[in-house]
Image 1 (cartoon, rainbow over the protein chains, first blue to last red):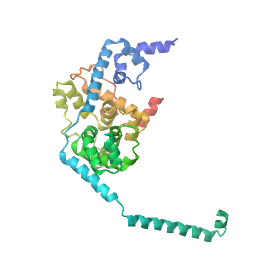
Image 2: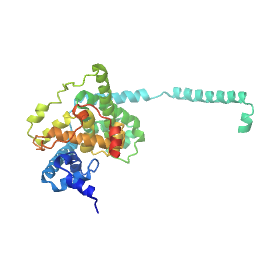
Image 3: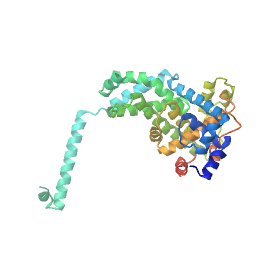
Length: 127
Length: 210
């Protein structure tokens, strides 16, 4: 059962109060839709006409998804060229990979040696 | 499309080129709708394909390839427009009422158009870019609120608030047009929106969440 305040709220909404909610109601989404506004729209023919109008807007927007705008042919070629350039730049020679691997192992060895010098028992405990 | 994607993921150079050609029209169209001009759209699309190529091996195929590519395009477009906006602010200082001289923005063309669809397209182009992004991603490309939030770098609540404001603004722009919205009951836009200034979506979302 509704309270008096709720009844006043639901019956008190006007077209102006409901205007903000019309796009959301048309989209079938409840975010930002006040219950009083929704109740008003349900019984107001003027607001229902607004909802129908916005539904036409949404239908036109949905149709735009299939539309393909013309683009300059040079930009497509430029994008493909940029991908080729990125692919070439990203290719790492095998000698560089081996050098990085050896360098990493060396660095790790140095760290372990330095740690054992500072704490002689470290390696014994680790074993 | 699936075969092209799989071939491109395995390193087939020709397949990658074919994939770009097959999807370029849709990607460019999305970027153009988000950025509002050809030059920015071209830059955003190139960034998008480079990012997509780098992440192609991680693409799991649990969503449609075009949906995944559109999300990357949305993110690249948003980053590009935000960068341009920051640059314009830094260049122009505190000037508020800057006339938009882009040829795509033509309120007179919108008023003159008798076709509903043409009026919707023209009205969409008139929206501030933050609001236009929300409408394009949700109402044209049907991205979820969560996906929109992720690509625009905002919370989901903020994405819903922005979409709500965008739809209200679109309705106001279309008032009196062939769509025949009743201009006697305008939506109540806060002053910040009427001035075209960005509002804090996070603050507004928290207020709406109560």
